[in-house]
Image (cartoon, rainbow, N blue to C red):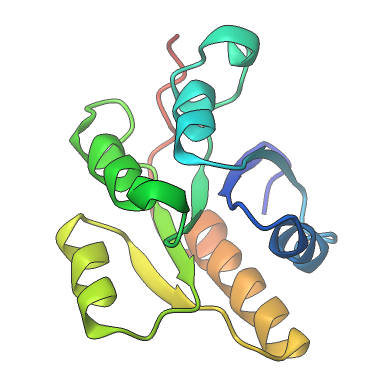
Length: 145
């Protein structure tokens, strides 16, 4: 994976953020982290202190953010002409059919259940990043402000 790839992690659990970053420690990517949907919007739309933020090539989105923010964020991103082509990997502990349906109806690119064991978690994160950043044909995100 080329070093110019950038990942946005939208996750309210600092432990999971640390694990995602650790899983990708040997992958040449940079990161932004948003702890909630509002902060993710600030980063993606380059508002306030995030005016210089790089648009991500991949978003890992926790689907259980407070106040239902995950679904609204996904809806917003997939309706935005400049952001809709950024792959969004929903990452969650939920196995509920309703959540899976919701994610795909809102145009998530994939729905991943967080594995409970560390090796499986790392393989899932690495495999997803490898696929979206190196295997799948995607377009570079629009970098306008």
